[in-house]
Every structure is written in structure tokens, then in C-alpha cells.
Length: 236
Image 1 (cartoon, rainbow, N blue to C red):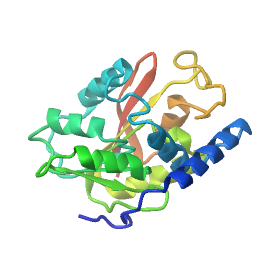
Image 2: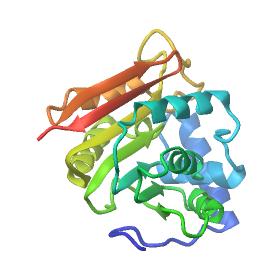
Image 3: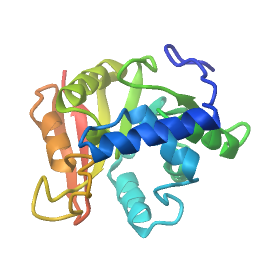
Image 4: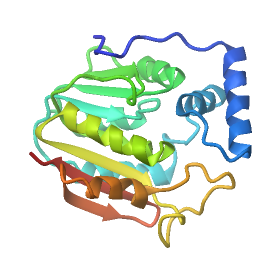
């Protein structure tokens, strides 16, 4: 099934990936935020599972707490933004079996999406698509949107615009779940800023942009030493 605005994309050649990786490194050294598409696809091309989603205790703990905070109810359509190679997507489908009819998982990296599709089982309720959520739409009618470790790679005005897009895509009374790592540039605990300060801020800055929007009602939140998970409900 091809969703609106999400055409299939050919993978970049090795030469193009190397060029993108070099441009990303140069921009970081110069203190400029690189293009997210180049940044992520270069990382996935260089190394499978670059963030150790399959083995990291940090990720496993975050996954468990993310699943705990999702309201226990039936979901006809779920959108996962920034699915990577689909590690959490498959875990969620397994743990919430019987509650989920269909999941659309999207990522900006064609390399990551290809790997996610390769791990997908025939007949399951998961669909993976390469998509830039700042330019493309997955359609609407979603009951839940999950967005983890993605938004702090965008400028604050872009995050606000993405939030407005989420509102369009969600059903009335739909939920939005955000999970992002904490940074010392935001508050007094969590990960210190990286040497190149990318991403430039963390969960507090990102989640505050949603807390301040009257279209979102904060339902539940958990603050762990390294990350924050916030559950919002679309306010009509």
C-alpha cells in the first residue's frame, strides 16, 4: 500500500552516500546543523543499527516505559515517526497484539526503511515507508502517533510546524507520544552536549513546544535520568 505523498525512493549510490557523509561531517565541524536526510542515511549506510536499538539497555528500558504509557485500548491506525530499522515497531506489534489493526512506520532514511522491510513478516500488520514528515503526508485518521528521538534534529519553528501536521493527521481525541533524551543544554541531568552540539537541545525544549500549544493536553509524563516520555491528547 502506497500512502499519499510517500513515493518509493531508490537507495543512493555508494559515491552519493560518501559525499553526503562528508558534507554532514563538514557542516558539523563548522557548527552548522546538517540536513536530517543526509545525516541519518549516512549513519545507516555506514553501520547497521548505529544506535544499538537491538542491544542497548538504555533503548530497551525506554521501549518498555514507552509501551507502559500508551493507553490500553484498540487502535485502528498508528503512525510511528522515525522508525529506523523497525526495532521498536516490531516490539510494539508483538506486545500490543490484539489491540492494533495497522501500523504505518516511516523514516527519512531509505537505507533504514529497506532493512525494516527485510525484517518484516508476510501477513503482519506493519507497513514501512520512506517519508520526510516536513514535506510529505501519511494521510489522516490516526488514533496514535509515536515520535521518538527525532524532533530535536529540527529547528524550533520546524518542530512547531510538525506539531500542526500531527494535529491534522490525528483523529479527534487521538494521542501523541513523544520520547526524547535529556540534555544538559536543557536541564540539570541527562546526557551532556556532544562535542559538535548536535542535536542542539533535548527533551525539555522539544516537549515544551507541545506543552505550550493549547491544541495539546498533557495526559501523562515520565522523567527518567536520560530521557523524557510525554503523552498528549489532541484537544478539540
